[in-house]
Image (tube, rainbow, N blue to C red; front, side):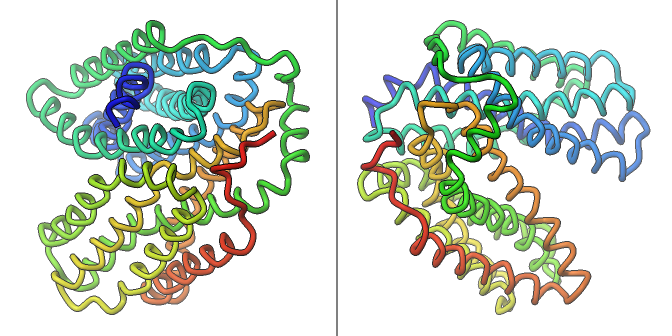
Length: 391
């Protein structure tokens, strides 16, 4: 671990941690800021949705920009766009500005993720890639803890505009980190940055997307569903907010503690066993939610969920990096990220539809079954990528 940290702390871990803290803080700041300037609850929810839409919209264009400018310049552009968006939010507290800058913030974050995957693919060997990606995923878990807490403290002490300005300065630090410590790799001459490159990447790698891509979609869908089903089940059990928070925190602690061991396992035994284990554990734990009878049973199920999610830290990024071809790599990574982002967005939408149609128990069991079916699909259709770099 020490050698990996020495090599990747400044170019990957440090800027990724700052980005994660800022992004998670925005999930708290943005909806409350909308309410503070006189917006409605619907507008508050819409702002977060726009940020997610921005991330999805960025995936494919960012892949093309990789081919044109390289991963370092894409990450620099994404970090600078975040600075601009946060400063505009701070200085112009109006709904039209917040709507446009929330979309810009999502575009910037999506582009950052695509550029980071590409850089790690270049900078790491296949034998260490799982641990590097797991460290990168660990920064997201760090952001989950620090971001909302820091946002709440800053808002209480200085108000929204100063809080947004502070996070703009943090994003400027990311620009400096990338400029100083991320090495520039000239884009491959045979990579096209036209829209045709996306079509070629999709056609040339269609078998990969129909197997590993579908598997990543399934895992992200189950992951995002877990984050919604757990509090909904707690509410259905008539637990108070504190008790639900304790259950969620129990799973989050286990999840956070496992990110580096998960990366180490990914490098030792391969990506496929990690994928299967995660889907089985998440599918089982979600399927057990209707059997919860109170706080302690909910804590046990949440802990099992944390184990299932923690063991898969970074595995989707790692497998995408393993599979990324030399030709049209940017287009491939953009499409790969889109599969994952659509999975994240689909989970809550499917749950909302099924809860309205058939109730919470049916929705929960259906998502659990999807996780188990996903694991069977990985066993049957997805090839191991750890010892077989893409040609």
